[in-house]
Each structure stands twice: as C-alpha cells, then as structure tokens.
Figure 1 (cartoon, rainbow over the protein chains, first blue to last red):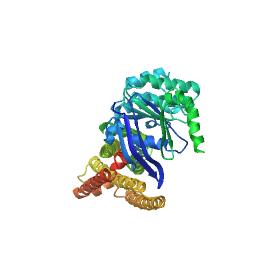
Figure 2: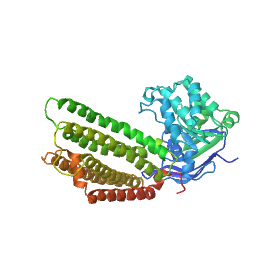
Figure 3: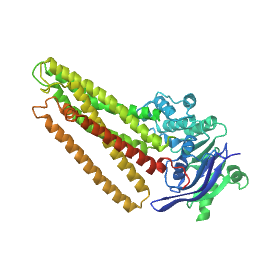
Figure 4: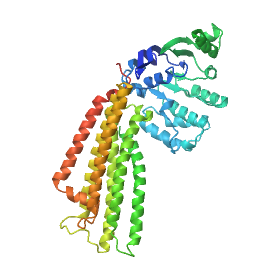
Length: 234
Length: 253
C-alpha cells in the first residue's frame, strides 16, 4: 500500500548547526506513529519541515505520492496551524473562516467533534481554558479531512481526564486510511494510542519499531523502552 | 486566493474602521460647534485624514508581515504568487473602502461649510468633491507603492537572512533598519510639508484638497499610477522568483 508519508534523506541546518541529518522513514495508512526524543532533538522542526513551513532543508517529502509542495500542504492537517490564543473571535467564526481557506475542511464534522468534546462553538477563543484550547485545536485539525495529521504535543499540560477524552476523539474522528505522526514527552500517556515508535536522537531516527513488538517481544512498556534507549547511550 | 483576499480585507477593514471613529466623532462635534461660532469643518477633518494616512501605512505594513510570519497563513495551500496577489487585492479592497468613507466624510464636511456660506476656495471650475477624490486616489496609490517597497525589502531580508550566518544576518538587519528609517523619515517629512501648506490662506479646504489640486494635472496622477504599477511589477516578480522556496518549501533541494 502506498505510504501516506515518505521522507528521504531529510537534512536541515540552522545557523550552521546540524539539526537533522539523513532522516528516512515512511508512514503507512491507518498508522499512528509517535516521534519521541529529548528536548531539542528536532521533533518539532521535523514536523514543521513536513508541514511546509521551514525552508532550506534538503531531501524529499512525499505525501500520498504527491511531491508538489502546494498539494502536500493541502494533504496535511496540523494542530499548530491553529494558535487560537490571541483572538477574540468566536470558535464557530474561526472555523467558518478556516473552511473558506482550506479545501478539505468539513464544518459539520467540526461541529460534531466539538459536541463530542462538549465544547461550545459560541465561546470566544481568548476565553478558552488550556484544555478547551487543545480540544478546539484537535477539532479544527480533524475536521480537515486529509490523509496525514501532524500533532505536536497535542496532550501537553492536560490532566488525565482531558488526555483520555482527546485520545478517544482522535481515534473516533480520524478518517479511514489516514495516518498520524505525533510528538509527546509523556510517553506513557500515549502508549495505548500508538502503533509505532520512532526515536529521534543525534539528528536522525535511531530506533523505529512497532509498539506491539516493544510490549510483546521485549516485555517493556513504551516508557521503559524510551528510557532504556537513553540509558544505553550513557 | 480570492477567499484569502476577502478574509484579509475583512481584518484590515476592522482596523480601518477603528481609525475612522475619531474622524466621525470630530465631524459630529464640529457640526454642533459650528452653530455657535464660525469654524470650518473640512479643515479640522483634514488633520484626521493626515493621521489616518500615517496609521494606514503602519497597518498595511503590519498586516503584510502577518502572512509570512504566521503558520496559519504560510501553511495555506497557495503558491507564493497567489499569496502576494491575495495581499495586493486585500489592500486594494481596503483602500477602496477607505477612499469611499473619506470622500463621504469630506463631502459631508464641505456641505456643512457651504451651508454656512464659508467659501471653500476661489479657484474656479473645480468641483471640490472631484478634487478630493483625485487627492485621495493619489495618496492611496502612493501608499500602496510605499507598502510595496517596504514589503519587498522585508521579504528580501527574510530570504537573505535564511542563507547567511548569524553575524551577517545581524549586519543585514542593521542595514535594512537604517534603510527603512530613512524611508519613513522621508515619508513623514513629505507629509509634514504637505500639512504646512494647509495653513496657507489660499488652501483652506485642507490637505487632501491641496494634494488633489497639485496632482489634478494628468501628469501628477499618471506619475503615481506608473510608479505604483512599476513597484507592483517589481514586487510581484521579485517575490515570486526570489521567495519561491520560502513559502513553497517542501521541494527537493
């Protein structure tokens, strides 16, 4: 089956410092992949390169076999497209404006997802709590019906209840054959969500294995696997 | 592209609407005051028009930057040229709306002055509203051209900086800041020069009317149109070719 995302030899330097080097991987349809790594490893940078907002990298990004940068942008939805912090707009108005700008955005789906999260679309964006903002970001992201979703720390700073609710929402409203590439520092909280784990270390992907393999063959939790990786380094 | 332009125009108009509030208030106050003592409403409004023009210039520059700085815009599946033209269209839309509001306000003010038998000017054969329209059009075109220059410099800097080491980036920033400072100084000086003329007895209708008279000759307006087209052409070609990779980033390098 054609991968939803394929990266070949991605390299990126900032201020002559190597951030990413020889990053190669592919993500198949229906896969939820966790991109793990220490702070500053380059996870967010890699997501932003795939999303098309960082210039001057080398290598190729293919999304559903598309190579045209504009087609790639249209085929990706991210949670960092929607900052939502500095506006007094109502959530529904914001979603209506988003629908106008994005070709695959489904407003009815957005309202359904908000109902699922029990989030009022009449709320002003600057009145949303942190948990509600994360819900709104995910609802906006998932209402864009595309093959690839990039989620940068979607559950960061949330209590367990909110995390569980968001994860349920993600699984319920993810389109068929779509893939997710997400980053998170709280490895254990996403353990039940993910199919595959990749560890970004020393500028490249150092480990790439399925979550089941970690649990069944290694007898480790995802968190233990992640920690053992760094202990090996020490 | 049209949708983005509409969305951007709406944002601009909100700010422009706020800029117009003091002007409308002033019109109301002056209308009341003129029943008690002789004042010329159109003169007073011209000061606000001047302030509005400076504000407008800042607002346009600010909004232009939003597109390139925010992921919300940079993530849009539009080509660089489409983004550039969406911004251009939005600016034109905003200027047209502003132009309409200014014409209406100045026309209202002129009518009030006429009602009180205050003579606008002794120059024969010129319709004051037409002169004000041409004046506003001229200023709008100059502003758009100015905005184009600043936008071009800004985006050139971004592209250059992305390819240079840190020290050279700082150097480029410093040079560009100096260039922009000179540009702004020259611009303000021109505006002030125009404003001083306002106080000469012959030009009683105000700054906009004066500008209109100065440029009513086809050469004046024609010059502004050519300047605007030249700057737009340069900006659009420059941005589209030089900044192709800045927005359309996911390409093989």
